[in-house]
Length: 196
Image 1 (cartoon, rainbow, N blue to C red):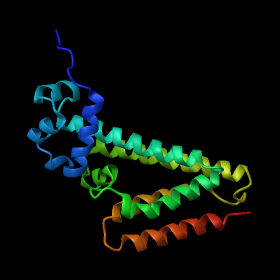
Image 2 (image 1 turned 180 degrees about the vertical axis):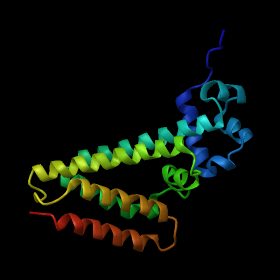
Image 3 (image 1 turned 60 degrees about the horizontal axis):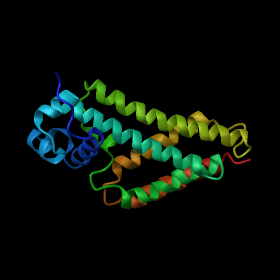
């Protein structure tokens, strides 16, 4: 008979996210993991299969929380267009508020081997969800008369999501504040060009 768990899985995943953010997958050793998580190796295997399973679970948790927060902020705005504009405005804080270790989705994508289908599929799912949320907000903005009928919400959403993750990738460079400010200004101008 299997022994009951003696730890909180959600708390363990929170700590796993912390460690993978600071160390990455390859550099996080099993002894570091078990010490940081406060569980034994066998408990890790029983709950997550192996280190890789733990990493994917932590990556999924991180992505879910990040995208949920961004979509909630967009929906909380006074109007759909203002929600998208606030999303763009938030880019400018990326260079100063982004953890020194960066965004786990971005670092995972950069470090994932080309044949790492599970990680890439997981990351793409989160990116797609944010893009769908942006597209939905832009469609609502269009239906409420905040954007012209000629505007293309799918194309605008794709452009915004590509710029956003490019920013997340480059946020660690010394020149990132100027790049981010310019990219945000261009994205806002792109929306303004479709104003009625």
